[in-house]
Length: 172
Image (cartoon, rainbow, N blue to C red; front, side, top):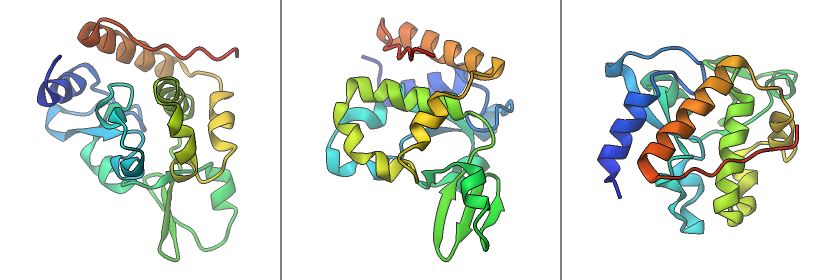
């Protein structure tokens, strides 16, 4: 087994594109993003925090803005008056949500892959998504070429590190 530091270094090296923006990020600005934030999973006591399916690379600024906000569908949130938006984060009255403009399918695919290994994650989906339908809606979104390429690169890295990879394959 490769140590935590080495795994983080591998993710930073093999994933030079921000998971949320798809932009190339210089090595100095790369940080590890937990698609399902660590704080959302404490009560389940699962090892999902260091599962490579949950670890992606993000630009440090995007990661700081994203925090541990729940994912939300942008159109639903922005239709509500009073929400402020910056870098995909929306805030109103002390509440924050993250509405990425891209990567819906990639994020949903990563979370669905994690759910295969950790079925108890379903208990916490309401702390990951603002709406119960968000995961299904994002899984039904067609893959973009960039998302598909990023997914394949990520799975290749996981397979190189662990010798295998869980591949979630929805019907659509």
